[in-house]
Amino acid sequence: MRPETDPEPDLIDHAADSLLSLIPLYHSIVFRPPHGITGRKAAQYRVLRLLAHHGVRQISEIGRLLSISKPSMTALIDAMIREGLVERQADPGDRRVVLIRITGKGKIRLATKDARFRQDAKDRLARLSDDDLRILRNALRDVRYLLEKTGDDEKP
Image (tube, rainbow, N blue to C red; front, side, top):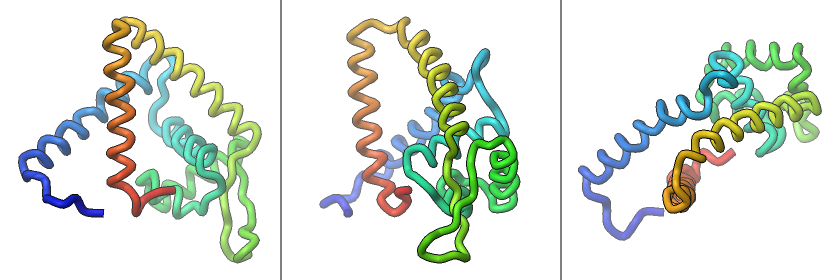
């Protein structure tokens, strides 16, 4: 759905730059010591989060949604299967298709990481005033709403 008028080019540039500037800030807050994760563990966390919230998926779809190459995705899923975090499942509609689903152990790992990340975030957010927290809550709600409007073709 296109807006009635096209946004000003400078407005689009500013919004894109502002959005990109959030990525390192987000990572420094969420994926930080002492409970932070990097590399393969961060990719595993992202896969578990996607599967927990959106159900079973094909490996190729997971890779596309998380911007992970096919060879890297295959190696990552194989490692996660060995750890018991996910498992392969035949697609009832097409037996040639293999789906990946999160296991009970994967759900426990995800819940453990989420609890740590959430507590870290709460500890950092406790530095803000109630007014600042309300502003942040409302801003994040608005950002989420707007980003969801831009990604209709990429919904998991």
